[in-house]
Image (cartoon, rainbow, N blue to C red; front, side, top):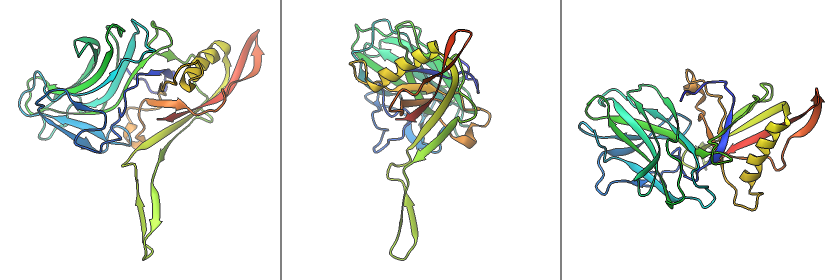
Length: 313
């Protein structure tokens, strides 16, 4: 599925996987991730920089890899609020041809249930020497008959090339407001004037005893993005849809709050490396109050204006 710079934004609810951009990595593997195989092959290394401002993971293997044992997986319980037959969408940023000493690879992403035996999503990037933004709709829905849910990634050989390596970054997995909705597409774009994306880091500074300045980041390189999206004179149907996402995100419907996935469409893939912004954010709405207010009418239609603030979690 293509990613188009400047297209209409999309929003959905996030399935509760964690550390999908590998910002937390305190041990041999990134936090929340583990080997899928009992005797894993390949190497799993930090790679800086990734697609965005934080690290990616590099999975490399030796020989010609046709059925990978280098798979990493993150496993969770299927949330109780997921309805049966819920359709979903998932994706990632994958660079599958590093060149140099590495052969061209196939970077694979899957969403599975039933101890990996049932597969709602499978997608891959093959032999790409630049970052590919992969987004795939589910071919099978989530089933509440299975209590498990897994996301896993692996590197295989492309065209029988030996020693493949792939970079993985910026995963997401999402679902919509009904079992028949994967995501909601904004029918109106935010106003260009006032649109404000910016990163937040957690650097700390001090002076040593000799007056030398010292700077460090106690989070190990985590960068969190905020996007302010102003909307002018949008229709009530759009406001109602955004209100549903706002209420569910805030936990106002007598249920636990759920993170969102915002596809902001502010990345130009031909120039993404200068901005280092993730192409989608797993985020919360930072507004304390729902921001849209009646701003007038036109031909009997009520119109609303306001600014939504999204903060990466």
